[in-house]
Structure formats: C-alpha cells, structure tokens
Amino acid sequence: MDKNDIAIIKSKRKSELIGKSYTTACGMLIIILTLSIFFFIASKGVATFTTDHVSIFDFLFSSTWAPEKIGSRGQPYVGAAIFIAGSIIVSIFAVLVSTPISICSAVFMTEISPKLGEKFLRPAIELFAGIPSVVYGWIGLSILVPFLRNTVGGLGFSLLAAGIVLTIMIFPTIASVAADSLRVLPSDYREAAYALGATRWQTIKGVLIPAALPQIFTGVVLGMARAFGEALAVQMVIGNSIKFPQGLTDPTITLTSIITMDMGNTVAGSAWNNALWSMALLLLLISFGFIILIRRISKRGD
Amino acid sequence: MRKKCVNFKKLSIICLISFIILSMVSGCKEDNQSSILVIGSTALQPLAEQAAKMFMYDNPNVSVQVQGGGSGNGLTSVSQGSADIGNSDIFAEEKSGIDYKSLSDYRVAVTGFAVISNKGVGVEDLTESQLVDIFTGKITNWKDVGGNDVPVVVINRPSSSGTRAAFKKYGLKGAVETSSGKTLTQDSSGAVLLGISETPGAVSYIGLSYINDNKSINVIKIDDVSPNAENISNGKYKIWAYEHMYTRGTAKGAIKDYIDFVTSDKMKPYIKKLGYIPIGDMKVSR
Image (cartoon, rainbow over all chains, first blue to last red; front, side, top):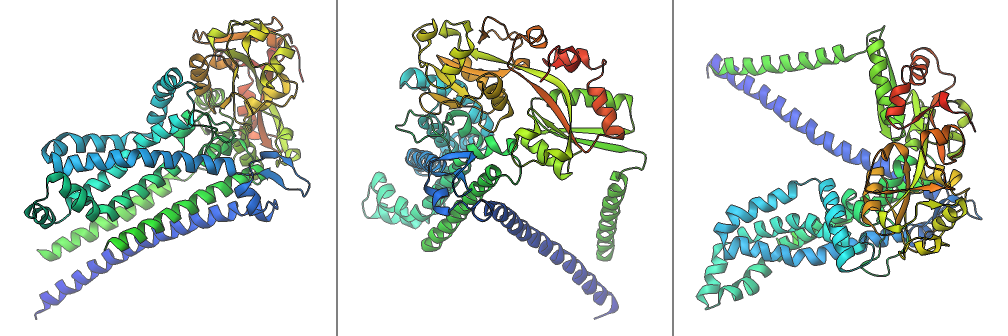
C-alpha cells in the first residue's frame, strides 16, 4: 500500500462518517419529532381529566356536550360519545363500501386487463389520491348534498354524504395497496391453479385473493385510518349537528369536525379547549392502534 | 482524481453551511426595525391586513404581520405574549379563561349581522320575538310566520364562534338555540352562504361584509328594519358587534401607531368598502 492508497481510504472513511452521521441525525430527528408531538398532545389532553376533573368514563360515554356549563363537582360537560360514534360509523361505512370496489378494481387492473389497468386505471387512481380534501369537500357540498336531498330526502347534509365522500377518498389507498399485493404474487400460483384446471375466476377467488389477503387487509386498515382522520371534507358535508344520527340521512358530527370548528375559537387552557385536546389525543391513540394492527397483520402474512 | 472529488464534496458542504449561517444572520432583525404580530378573528382579518399594507407603506421600518386563527386564538396569544395584538369579535370578558384585566381593548370597527334565509321561504320581515322563536325551535315551519309551507332548517355557527355569540346576545337576547329538530352547523361564512342558497327552508346569520349584492339568498328585515350601515349607526338595527384589537397593557410605540392608523380617517373608505362600519360613524354605543 502506498501513501496515495492510504489517503484515499482515509478520505473514504471520512465521507462515510459524514454520511452516516447525517442519516443518523435525520433518523433521530424524526423519532424526536414523533415523540415530542405525542407528549405535547398527551400533556394537553390529560388536562381534561387532571385539572378539570372529568372522569374518563364520562368523556368517552356521555353524550352531554356543553363545555361552557359547569356541573355539580365543578366539572364541565364534555361527553364526547356523539363525536366518537360519528367518527366510527362514518369510517366503517366508508370502508364497507369502498373495500369491495377497491378489490374488484385491483383485480381488474392486475388479472383481467393489465394493459388497460396499467394505462388508464392506475394513473386515474393515482390522480384520485392527489386531489386535496378541500376539493372533495367542496364537490360534496355543491353536488352530492343537493343530489341526496332531491333523491333520498332529508337535508342532504348527512352521514350518507360524508360516507360517500370518504368512500371515494379512501378508494385509491385500498385499491393501490391491493393491486400491489396482487401484482407481487409469484406467477407459480397462477400457473399451478391453471394447471389444475381452475378457471380464471376460480384462480382469482380461490388462490390469488386469499394469498394477498393480509396485504389487502393492511390497505383496508390504512383506508380506515385515513377515513378516521379526515377532517375538512367530512366537516363540510356531514351537517355537524351534535346529536346521534337516527338514520343514514341524518346529520351528525365527528371528532375531527368538532376539533377544527372549535379549536381557533376557544381559549387555551379553558376546559373547552382541553376537551378538544383530549379528543386529539384520542384520535392519536386510535391511529396508533391502527398502526399496531397493520404491523400485526403484515407480520402474520410473512 | 478521486481526491479531487472528495475535496469538491467538502467544498460544497462548507459552502452549504456558510450559506445557511449567512441566511440566518441576514434574517435577523435590524435594530431600528420593529415588527408587530396580529393574530385572531377571521372576521377582522381582511381589515387588519388592508391596514397593515397601507401602514407599512407609510412606515417602511415597521413590519406588520396579520394572521387568522379565530378570536379565542387571538385572545390567548396576546395574553400569553406570543402576539402583540389579538383580534376578537367579542369582549375578552365574555371569553372564559382569559385574564381580561391585563388587556386593553381598542374598538376599531363595527360589524353588522344579517339574518338570511333560502329564497323559497316567502318571508321578508320578522319580528324580534319571531326570530327568537325560530332559532329556539318554537317555530318549525315558515307558514307560521306568514311564509310558505316549508320546514325551518337552522344553520348555526359553532358554539364557540364569535359570530354566534354576538348573534345570540343581540339577536336572540340570550335565548338558548335549539339543538334538536333540523339544525346544521357550518363553520365558515362561505359554507353558510352555500348552505342557505341550496337548502330549502334554511335560515342563518352572517356578517354584512359577506352579503354585498348576493342574489342567491334572502335577507330578512327585523321589525321592518333592514340590516345596513345606516340603520346600525343610528341604532335602529340591533344585531351588531364591535371588532376589538386587544393589547397587553396600554398600547405603545409602533403598536399604538398601527391601531391609531386602523381607526384613522385614511382607513375609513376601506372600512366601508370591506363591509364594516367605522367606529366614528356610530351614533350609539354599548
């Protein structure tokens, strides 16, 4: 080894060191950011229970929302049951409607007509995913709401309107994950099924979809998480009435809508504001739950 | 050759770092430059922004930044010291959780609120008690107040909103609005306008600055008085509110200059143009 080689190795090591420390710093930054966001929201969110003396049970299961009033024990009435129910119902509705459509279009895209799927359907779905939520909301407000009012009745502002908007919004998430999971299946599966005399439909139904199911579930959970967290589009069409819906055409409200509507108008540190933070914490915990669920599912798939 | 490459990398990193440092230094405030941060009410925001633009033109060494975020946000920010001026649609005393004694109130303009409805209700005039009955849920069909046979759909603002607080206090005399029956909530004036123009039987309230010559909605007179600047300034029309700018302690220096500028004669035509009423025009006060 001559001097020159040693110098090269040294300088290589140096640049490696720089690269390594830079990537480590970036990784650490993300971890610190996530943790500090969590602790910030948690510290604000627990104030409802510690300083305002609301019991967790009341917060989760009471439907009395009157944060400006003070109860007998000095606690404000911040029951979030209506918001929680609204969020759950509307997300489940969206997932139930969106999942079959998404899986079918994924099957079409990968198995039935890959050419057409690759050329038109895939770009269309990608375009769908790129539309900002305020646009979905505005279209929902100006087209879907009047349409529902004239066809199914009611006010138009309803659980149904929000569910339909969310169905369309989470469709690209579920469809693209499902399509990817079908695409990466080894071609042996298809060939083996055909060799056994299975038709295309039998192959799809009996072999491909079952094999891709864990990944498809991941897509469904991702879609569910998106539906749960969507604020703007839902808030614009759901009507935001603070009461339990009696049917699909009734207006109701979700966790995210009450947060976006009240956050700017309430004073930091007041019971009202604290209750909104508690709901934000609840949303965060729910999305953590979804993430854990996804990890469980994909682990089982391996 | 390789060595040169590494040197080039090093050089670029040094350049990058020095660029960052330079830009940080140049971003620092100069001593003779003062900046004012205004946060709060979205209803007052257009006026505050217009004033800021003109004020900075006259005073190039002061920078005024105006942000929205809502009245509650404005009051919180100014009392915690993170903003110099907090804009609010309602008195700080009326917002729970604010140490209003430490704040100084500057009333910069007046906003009127009109009761608006869908065009198909067939009603152009309501008495004050009819208005209260509609919003408290006692009247559920427009035919009970001389209109068409259309059910009433109340579109409210969120209960924390300054507009709703003002309407409840001066329009409904403090009566509690119904939450049962056909009620919706929309949190922006634009969404309220769209909801009103499309939903049969819908009724709501909105800042006068949003109405202008809007033909898609029906503006309702209260006790035969139209909501307009003249009727508000002479006290005939009751549903209006002050737009406040709050400062911590008494306003001094550039902050005082800016608030004075907002209420100055120079701003008056703009205040009117944006749909507010200049404080100097008011013949009544609260």
